[in-house]
Image (cartoon, rainbow, N blue to C red; front, side, top):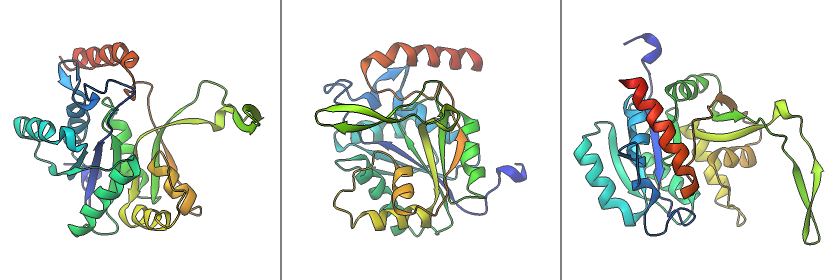
Amino acid sequence: MSQREQSAVPVVAVVLAAGFGTRFDPNNPKQLVSVGGKPIVCWSIEAFEANPRITDTVVVVNPQVRHAVERLVDQAGYPKVRMILNGGAERVDSTAAALDALAAAGIPGDAKILIHDAVRPFVAQSSIDGCVDALDRFTAATVAFASTDTVLLTRDLGDVKVVQSVPDRPQTFRAQTPQAFRFSTIRRAYALAAHDPDFHPTDDTRVVVDYLPDEPVAIVAGSETNLKVTTLADMPTAERIAADILTQRR
């Protein structure tokens, strides 16, 4: 193992698979849907299993799919999966459950935590490595992909949204996952956010940006193929990406 692959602290992947997926198919949880002959959640777990710099994986699930995920993990024998936890009603509740479990397990404050949406099954190894490396210099980082579209920031004008500003396109990125943090940083951000009754962020980077504004969040290069499977309309694209990956592995 090279020096770059070694880590003096734990590097923990938190795979969030607790969403119910009502925009996908309420009767068919998307974490368990097969893409390229493999459940989506397994693609995500295996991405971290394959990276030698990841020391441990925590999987956070919707209680309704817990037994199914436990069976998949048992059958595959993923050695890095240390815990499977029940998630909460919202994404932030699931992240908080993972952070609490890691704290209870005695994880050190300087541990590196990579939080990943299970329904982004094709995360690149270069993005995982980029997150681990970024945390040597910063306490927070996020995978993102440069926007090829012009982004409009809006405001409400009565019942209509109107354009408030148009950021320069080179400064706009599409957030992806993993999002990475030193453990003490993300714990502190969540502790501050817990006192805010209006706390409803949709990703973990937002928690740091809002509650620890002096902590810079580094951008790690993402990819067009780091697709988030949100609706059934995403499945043909996901199948094409999976087919390309499997072809490259042959």
